[in-house]
Amino acid sequence: MKTGVVIFPGSNCDRDTHRALSSLNNMVDLRGSCSVKFLWHNDYELDDVDLIVLPGGFSYGDYLRTGAFARFSPIMKAVVGFANKGGLVLGICNGFQILLEANLLPGAMLPNSSLRFICDWVDIRVENSDTPFTYGMKKGDILKMPIAHFEGNFFADDNKINEIENDNSVVFRYCNARGEVNLKSNPNGSINNIAGIMNKRGNVLGMMPHPERASDDILGSNDGKGIFISALNWLKR
Image 1 (cartoon, rainbow, N blue to C red):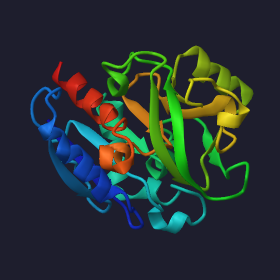
Image 2 (image 1 turned 60 degrees about the horizontal axis):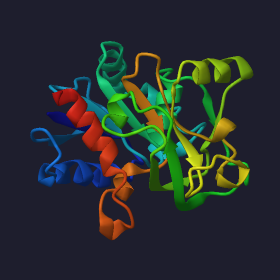
Image 3 (image 1 turned 135 degrees about the vertical axis):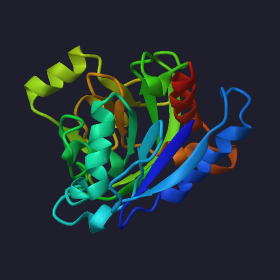
């Protein structure tokens, strides 16, 4: 299985993501091996990959809007084509924002309700276990991961939110350690505590928490590794 991690000017989680994916080769519950390569924003070709990851960071300095410039990078035309053909795409934090700007996912990101940059640990609840990225997980599972963003307040109009909810497109929701979803467990003001969504086809996932920063016990949690393992095992099924 081959994975590509896209590097944009301003990406700062690309190497963390590469390392987290590369470390999967030591996991006994991974079906097969995983090779990882970097993809440059100015490239027009993806080569032969099975999974694309858009990492976190501050692509193009977050000028204009988060992800707005990155959406027009040459590589994104190939990413959109890959996604439209059913290829697996994961956008993490700034990668999620880029997916929204590229119209691969619905909605938009607003500044956090606190109007402050938030860097903290959160708990998220698996809302949909029938996806490539939660393959092998159970609905209701609670994952511990960090967030680091200023614009992570997911927003869409009422009709779009109803559509997202009715289509079971919410994959992760902010919760507390007991799995309770409420205002206190919402770190940024996201509607319905939404932490991650997928497209209707189920092959594109955007999430604000950082699974690559929760991929080893020494980091404080290895729950994020399960998302990468799920996607790769789903491809190998």
